[in-house]
Image (cartoon, rainbow, N blue to C red; front, top):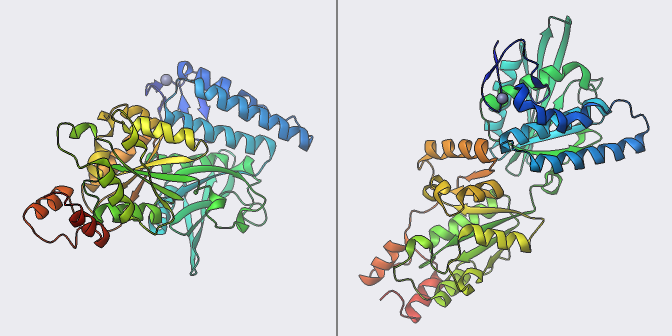
Length: 430
Ligand SMILES: [Zn+2]
């Protein structure tokens, strides 16, 4: 089968000495692969270190160097992510370390389950689908995929465990069986199989996120949010909020619930760039209404940063500012489908996509095919992580509220009681 360079797409001839990322499952042509070869050199030549302590140091140095050089490289975020996989698998294989790259899905259990099954089916000859274990706390399935390697006449199996808890589905085990079937120490025999599995997974462009962990026994994994590093995330919800309504409230709360964020920062905008020239309610009122809407929710902070700025704040600038305040946190910008689809056209849109994550929420089914397509495009072009939240959100617009108020109609199912009172007391939108 002809192989294509994962970077430039050109067909790699049989005679060409291509660079094979054997674990991650990709080929790079000679020209494109030169840099990758240098990046991976250390990890590929690890096998002569026998002192455990020295090994840790060597691996530490290799990683540090790799990540520093990778940052400077010209590869796309997608290729960079493949190279990271390859590095970790190389370390796992060559140092006999139990390095696992856990893939975790924001999708529910069934969707992740199906993705694993389909990828396994295309990589193997036999799929043993074991019983599903479901408790109140988690759902788990173990797959055993089997394949005959004709060249070596060996028969090998690949164990994949997926487990779901608290809305996150994780591939906890991916590897071959030593005695207990769960240990990941037998990297030598099934690596081609593992790479076939991931290739199939990628070919279907599944949305999953990655986290490297080193663990003693993957079978005895504890499902906690901390354990999977999915906390440490802050959601930023910006908008004119003129006025803030129950649709905003539902989206913010859904982001907290389904988006695995620890904290929600609601950021009323001074004047959003595309609303210039339109009359916007005074900042202090929009700020006060935002506070009232999320009153009592300890995870929500309403920020007056943009309101206090002398100039219009673009999302990118605000996100950079917040990243400076929270250097260790992953920042996720929360927005609706329509805005998400236009992100590339935003001010510094590409930089936004490259540096931050997104939580997209809208009514179920709304432009869903386009949304899925955009998520895949951003992921492959910029490495962007996007979480789609599916909460049922009321279809309310601020315009509708302003018009209702002008016509002296009730707005009591559009905003919170406190906001309704505030609007009346301050004579807004008359
Ligand atoms: Zn190439």
